Length: 370
Image 1 (cartoon, rainbow, N blue to C red):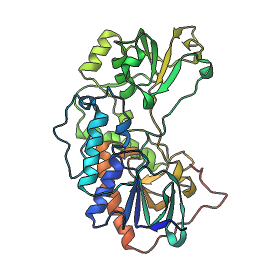
Image 2: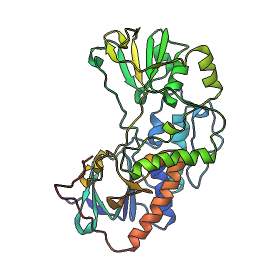
Image 3: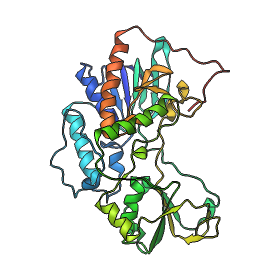
Image 4: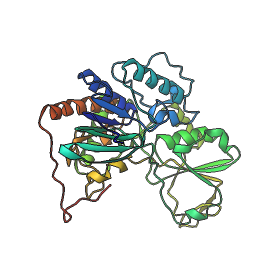
């Protein structure tokens, strides 16, 4: 039985970037299911927010920006962000009748017939003239590798599986990572743990004063330059520094945020440096970030030799049918909103023109596949 369905646009992902894109597609007059479809592999609304740790309350969320067309108001700052934002996303999908299909796993995106894309999923196959990839990073936690890692007798876990601070009561915890998650974990865990140690590859940069529009533009520009060069994107947060708020100041005064340089190896009982220093540990918590979830795009051979996908605005330079929203400079919530609008505007021009034929590289000059 042929389960292939035709639409103009497939949107992969229903987090901030995917819902923003779907909203703008709707505003151009396209109809869900008939003209475009939104595919989401998660069990329910909320994007990556639905998986955040329970102790991350809405009041602690850094930089959550409302989806276009509907503000998030009156939220209780003491409620878990996973609940608040998942409920908000669910209302948003219903209000704008976006008809998100879930859970649907997208397995591969390939060239199809007549210049169309072939999107192969667990729920059948779609063909489309354009694709908005809004898969984010949550599904690809980055685990660094260090000598001796496999010998560690304690527990290792990543931010993606952080259960909350009470799980670490009475334990010696090493937190690895200099971003917002690492500092939040440390400040939460310290009152419960027997001891905490904070290690980062580079000294943390704390930002004084407000993060104004000019500073935001400068940070985004740095990430944009990387994706224009076909390099793997860094998150916007990675170039803005850590806000020096009251909680961070207290952590610095208390010695909780006493940063140590990155250890050189992992031992069965902890971590060690080449100068002979060792720290005993029961847990190593890797707050080391995420990588873009784009493996399903591998058949299109979009990745450059530098390791990333070269993007102009949101459009993949190697294939103008493909837009990446929530990738690189648009990986913030406000950036995803703007990128969704820009991608839909660009796709509108593509749909108004003739079908696009994409020349594929020969074996000799093929870029490194995803």
